[in-house]
Image (cartoon, rainbow, N blue to C red; front, side):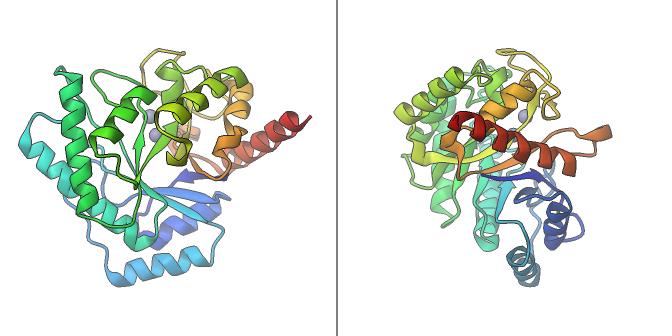
Length: 287
Ligand SMILES: [Zn+2]
Ligand SMILES: [Zn+2]
């Protein structure tokens, strides 16, 4: 498992690599543009080349791009859908340029409308973005299940993949906080086994793409998206250990999106803690 954290690329893409290394990370996640604006940032060829060179000479072996928060591929408004398609396609192209492991996408929201129709709209937009780009995988992130957000269950994620014609570049990004909040008890080995069996049956384990590691401020099934620092939430140290040492996750990039100290983001100590808990969990499983 390549453990790391979400970092800022402000000051230029290569800065993200520097920040990742300062955290002792093996993987990073970045926004390829301001997450709360539609306007795409164009990255020069020099900047892309500098990023690739910095990454090659660093401890970072995987980079994820998180798509803009404003996107709603499932919107009933054709204008929002068109803007979402343009932005997602741009992220996938940047992902291909920088050699990203994947672009992570919140699948969208049905708001108060029909969920089945929303899944079909999102699937069509996602399929189109994949057609307009090449190479870079797209990881659909499971959600906490707040309001009409799509992707609250493995079943719904499977439906989204199907609605996007089952494209081979589609995978899953599993967020530990969102899993717990949406009702998956990932704190126990039995709960994890059940989840992995469901993914295997409905989506296929080959579609496991990446992980977001966050503890949860709110309880199992709360449908609220409130990240806590690792070990300080409802997962606790024991729950974190179980999740991190799951055999099916062995080859995945796993990034923290936690508030950290005074909301300044994940810390070096937290990255180290994750690595330690994973090692501890593997040793326990081997006994
Ligand atoms: Zn996440
Ligand atoms: Zn979240």
